[in-house]
Length: 371
Image (cartoon, rainbow, N blue to C red; front, side, top):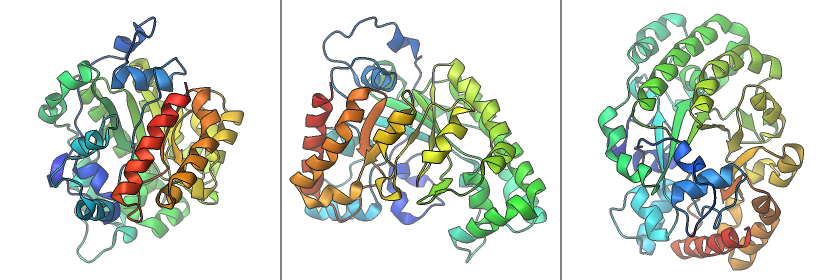
């Protein structure tokens, strides 16, 4: 697990900020929230999040920015007047938003990409290359116990929400094979794909067990990105063969501890929700509007499905009227419970600092209206 600026991030530069300036987590058990029989006065961040996601009463919905910003967005905001040197947590507080800590544990931080190979081209082509370049990174699962303990006091006090995230069983093979080769591997290299996911499952289970010795996060997300604008990039049969067996091993452990298991998948997730429900997943994010995701339709089909995201990021720079119109679209679902509105992916650089501050102000207003 990596936190801070030393994270050897293997993703596109635009998606780097939300990892390299956050992360850390703390002990505490979900029963801390469930023992509160009634809401008394102002809730803390953690109580509010747990209650909202569990369809319970809240003082107001959490005002959060879940996936945060592109690097280019931060660069623009610094020119617009954002104070220099703020961490992700400090930036959230500067805007007056609730704070969550995102702990992404992945063996990929230890995998060295061959020189000159683009991310989309992956790391390997053959099993021999897997043995040499990838398998060693999966051999000794470990979490950074010291860093996981740093903000334990804040979590116990309810100051922050903690999200534990793992690479999923569509995501990891895609990063290792590369985008095109990964899709062919379902047919051409199924044995290697299964071996890869078996190794990843052992790694994730070990890291989860280690992490649970130190903290009980509020939610666990499995990063997949298995959908695009036309729906899933694999069939249900492929999901059941290559992904479902590993969910059945890791999801029950999270649920036993009261951790909300969710899947992070971009694109149109509509048809995938029943697949995820079949393995115990309780919700998803970020619900991209441009991909056709309709949170109202998801709520109609799945009344207890938990959701985060859904606000169309492409309207944020268009001013107050467009922002209010978008929140009016989301308000009925906000009032239904089990849904926290945030941008449906990272805030793009077209959004000025003043645009974003206006968005936050209106977000808070509607988080109050929703209750």
